[in-house]
Image (cartoon, rainbow, N blue to C red; front, top):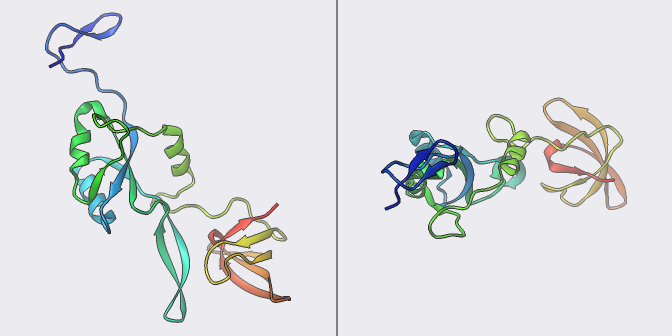
Length: 189
């Protein structure tokens, strides 16, 4: 067992029986059990552990109709924030709904750069939904990246309320007008 004391200048040193200082919380990645996102989020919240699972809306065809479906940005994984030196990482690792924390060292979990997760959180709303494509304007050339018109190129005709846009698509040599979600397109140069 390691023994630590607090020295006046250098922090903790060997000597008396005390716990090492708790460092600031860091972001980690945890692998989810199949269909375990809701269970993991519930149990992490119950333990008071901050977590983040970004998602986006995709338009899918179901039974001949288009439907908006909530899809995780990183399927099978969730971000968790805690101080590993506080002894919480074993509790997080044993949380129902999680398989394990992602580790490169078997003795401790591997932290992520805070700027990476904070940058991702800045692009999401309070519920974790990824924001729409940045700065779209009328006349921009875009490529559809989701839904039945995926990979088609078109031009934005109008921006509408509720993150919807009207696009003129080039389909089989004809221009076709359609309304789609702004998150389903990417801007071309």
